[in-house]
Image 1: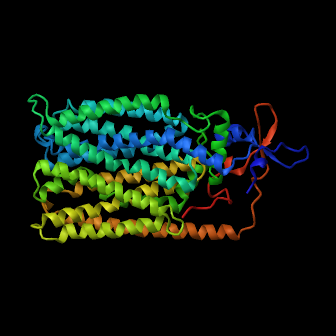
Image 2: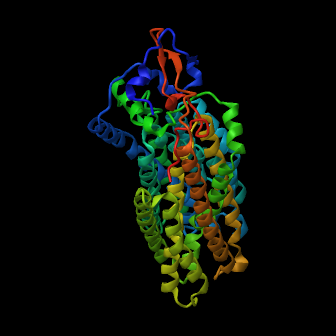
Image 3: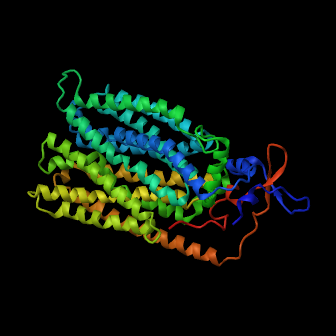
Length: 511
């Protein structure tokens, strides 16, 4: 591994070297090549705290709002949207499915846009459009109109999760990413709680010309609109341009993540990295996990209906829905805490979370239907299955290098996520109600399959790490230079050459 001072080493006249263009390397290469200031652990800790204070609140609030927005459909089910828009069970399921189908179709274009344009600005535009579309929901009184706005909502949402994955990988080391992804992902639980109390209040409104579910869309739409404006002005695009960092701190922020061996970003699409990604079996194993792990996410739109079928009235169902959020917060927090322990890691933590989730799903399907308290607690235990996915999102960024490869992997994984969410909506057919044996059996099977996929992925990565540990050190990329702004050739550390994890033999896969 090269020392920090080597990064800015000037080329000796007789040095055998390779010169590359700035657009071939990471955006951080130029900035870090012009400084050789060492970064002490104390300075790195202070810098991380500053980054945390400036970007984590935005990411947490934004993820809370986006989840709250896309789950308004589930809350609207008990606020009168089904009766007011004259929806059948199949049509209601289609409103959940079309969101993820449009998410699927536009996911890779969104990832390409996140590579081409400033990440923060592109997300802000999508959040603004998201807010406008959400406000339009209130004017929809038919299946066709709701179908159209849900389709548009899915397009806009496609920029948020991949954008957050990219930003997290830009600012944090691999060891820090799992917790940070977990922190913004567990905002989903807070969204459920907040939305539950808002819905409870709206159930007591009495405006004849404006239904409670329409008020829900207006309230959430306005909050999202305000957030999009704040996001545009205050959310950073990259550590190289972050407004809250001084020039010296920007270089230090890049040097801090040098240990990742994956750089910051590169704005140019590289065909060879795209082909490497689609030919890598690990990509498709990760895609399989993302799809199977999100079958359980169909509960997002169905949970209110499921709890109501246990025998609770609308008021009780709405308030009990808040407990869903508490369970989600606690399970995700527990999961990311365990996953951050080196002796446990991401894969084994995911498996640990699936054990109670599978038990809960089995009990929901097998307990006597008269035991509504037992069914309710079994349903809450099944929510443990949500926890492995945020661990996985942080893991994907930690085991993928090369910016085009990273955005392509993110695109494939999140397309599979969309497929899992889209197809799972149709499990919940009227003919299976109220016990829903078939959906719960499918959820149980997919949870088991996802756990197996995590173990296989860990085995593959651990085997590759051992293989690389036995290899002779590779110095192929140790003599690469770029021109700095003064015209002097300076050496670039291979961590900032925008190499893929396969090309950079110093890269080690986090387990």
